[in-house]
Length: 248
Image (cartoon, rainbow, N blue to C red; front, side, top):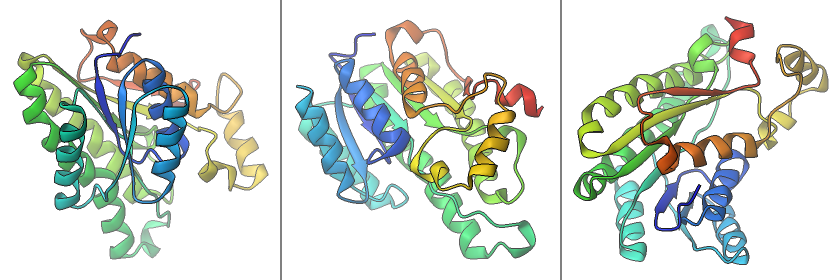
């Protein structure tokens, strides 16, 4: 997969899955805008440059319209275009429904779903003008099958799926594809904090028998961003070791 003439924005790419995506796209030759709200973005941009790639860190809160405008404008002023948007930024604030606060509901929906709307809207006019683009958004298996204690997170991820299918229909005639990826249980800092017995229980639900890595998700993103995926749009790709079919 050759992305040497492309420019990508990867939100929430200071660590975990986002970092793996940024590095993988850079390996494929893309210039990568590394976005996060903290200094981790600078470290990932430095990693990309150490690989002789083009990386630019832009700190921005993608749940805020003004920050998103600045992110997109800076990316274009730096690299001249935007070809690939990876909506990866997200948080979780888990709690059972009867105990979930308004704040926890609103915060997750804003960061995980509204940011996807803001960033996608921000890049589409540029992609439409160049008649080529890739919008790849991070959903979750939880957005498909649900999960106790994650009503806010599951709702946001399910919303991303509906959003993706709608955007795909709206911009297909302009050479732009929109797809979502639904990861299952991926080995990140967040999942590493789970009790070992919980991790083992989750592994037993995975038909392939092991926990996925951020690189597994990054490979799927690189494919969907490439010309090889030009005839794929409006789809949800599960990267879950078969977890989705075992839950359904």
